[in-house]
Length: 248
Image (cartoon, rainbow, N blue to C red; front, side, top):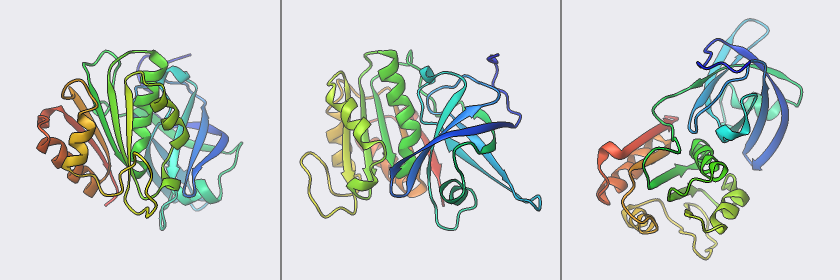
């Protein structure tokens, strides 16, 4: 049974498969014991319990489109040095294992296909995950809303969902993805090689037919602050910007 209201109690989910995305990031595909519907941009809480009862809990964005169905989700998790939860996923977890989670959570950083456009997405590192859910939602629904994405990674090998983003970009159906690499010495055609700045944001905005009605920015605290400032400097109203931050 699919619940109309999100169940916030903890449930078990089974890891069905693990797909490496980059050297430090993998997608974990989970089957839910209690299916729920999702909106693009939402997240879940994951809880691990040690044999002595110690518990660690983290929130992770979901990467799948809502059209993927209510019984399976994709968490794209970066292994963080010194972390309590992400090392378990990368060094211990295997297909068939059960974990605890609750959700879906989040009602602000979401995108609905009937929201006004154009849309600008800006992501840094694993901040791409909720934005990927939005890009997949647009592709799966077939809505023609113009959507541009500006994605910053350290180097080409750390561009999460790289092949899929290139494929979406290649359709030329109103989705336009711009990459920038902050630590890559090898220049690539059409790919910036510096941190996001006002000029880069302005160039990305020129790919849209009008100023965006909504801007979604996700990444580290420093990244979100810098990107938000660049977007406002480009003439976008502060009220159009929605942000999600991680890390310290």
